Image (cartoon, rainbow, N blue to C red; front, side, top):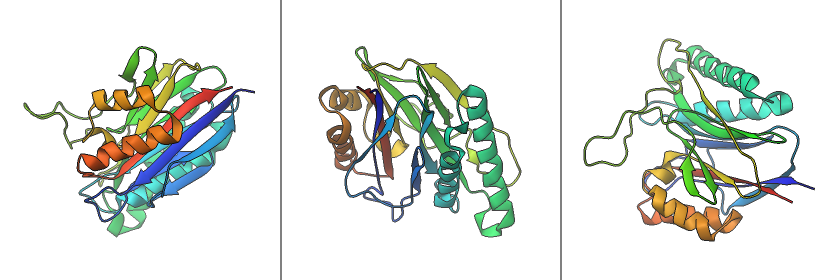
Length: 246
């Protein structure tokens, strides 16, 4: 029987005092905490499954509150998110709820979060994001980013930037978002990596591809985390690997 295997972990990194990342895998969520080792969850293929990583906006208050609110809301939708339209509606509602929560509590003003993930359907997959957290497709042709970064081009001589042009919440006045949603193939030859920039800022795409070429599931997640830590672990590291098995 075909199944969906999702292997995930979340870690604060070496320099941050708190983990402001959150994670949703179907009904399962992990918010503001650390996994001691990668965890693999199995789900039957056929019912819609959301896998999402949210990275609380740094430099502004309560990033962990915003990221937790978003992943818990996505998890709470269950199988109702079953296509591009309902996914876009769900992300719009998440955005509105971040603003509403911030308006209700002054100490949360301007909190925000990115979000990126996959919606796994019976015969296809939708990659989505708002912000600069990423989704990669890993297949026979190598590693390819399928999300769209909401960020300006890095300055000359730099590979990354910490600036983002679109997040859920993040300002005092309400602002709508335009989620990036892309259809992708769903085959046994493909895997998908969903992650926060705590992985992709210190670790290059070439290094990620090399690790995923030789490792899968828990070993792959561990090696990706290890690479980020060995590169200095400057930020929270959260990732999920999605694959289809028989």
